[in-house]
Length: 433
Image (cartoon, rainbow, N blue to C red; front, top):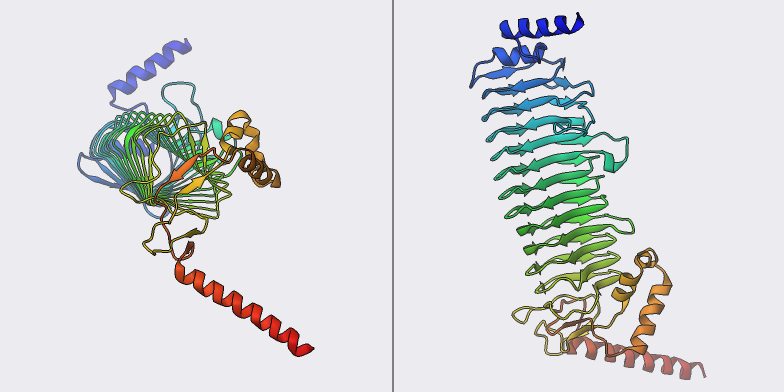
């Protein structure tokens, strides 16, 4: 009897033209004509909706769409949809079916999501085959409680191309922005913190990534099995933990890493199983390890990078001479003072790093826990005494700056100061007699 009543209700609803999502907000959407704007009130709409036509939905200062922690809140199946100035919150947290819960699930191209607050969601904004979408000026937060691995993504881009993701703030998700089989996207000026990976690329090519900040994550950004990526003028900072990193490049080729800042990370840049990458004009400051390169990588070019106050500037894990530490007679700025007597901006001798730290890390990853220990310094000094001829890095054209170069002028001034000091001490001693 109950089954017959349910079936009858569905039939009657269909005949009357009602949607299964027939709450107040869904009715307002259904009544809005294609191309029109729906202006919502300063109130909370507790509803789950499907948008099947090109409309604009705008909110006011206190407009909220609340999913009551159930399922996906907004599904979009039409192009030319605009959502603006709304707070969308409390999606479900289920990932047990294909329809993983999201605050917004976009399944059509050429849509815009701007000035939204997307809070307490499994996935914040899920693009599924939604090309040419504009995601801009949004504040996206996952659920604070629960383990990181049990959370979704802030922005999930799956098989979606030519999208612009700009000026968004993302927190408390598994990965801030996750790409899967998605190409030709622009990711600009976003800020991501308190996640596993701030950015995560898988099998996604020809993407540009500029001016983003990744602060306080387990990993700033992970580029995996993706090619032709440009990472320019981004900041990777305070990504700490025994296995943490600012940026990892794994199984990828033709990656250009240009003018980025790597500050206060366990490892600034980590590269393995990658080839034909250019690492140029980046700053590595106060990391435990500035750059870690595994011998599975080849044809990497490092030039005009600046290393400052890192515990170890570069670690090579395994023995490999397949990478270049200079190009066109331009090497890198190393943190050790060097001679530049002819003042041409290039060190008078090659920069040589003699280290076996990479082999130690390869044999025992627990060594990362002791990077600040005097034992690491003792290990390195002992290695240099026992194996003085083992060279891990050789930069034939190390670049000099005013703070680290020892010019002839500086040496002469230093000698004069020393001589004057010695003569002054002798004079004072004689005068006391």
